[in-house]
Amino acid sequence: MESKANAHKSAKEVGKTRQLRIELSTSYDLFMRDTAASAEAYPEKEHLT
Image 1 (cartoon, rainbow, N blue to C red):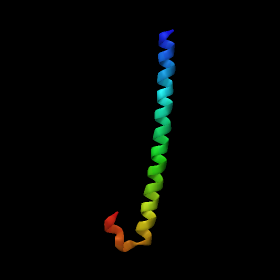
Image 2: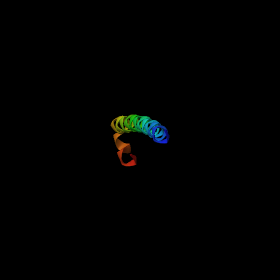
Image 3: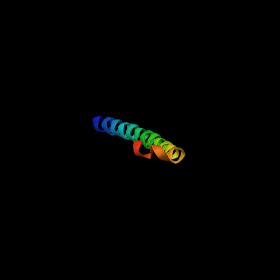
Image 4: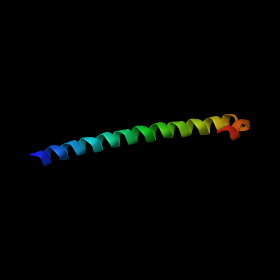
């Protein structure tokens, strides 16, 4: 019985981690796209990025 509960808990943890990873990569992707867009819009500020 205990092992089943542990398996369920670990599956829950994995799901949480996967969700977090998706959120992180999405926000990182948006950030990088935004940075690239600003670099194109303001070429003279390229050294700041």
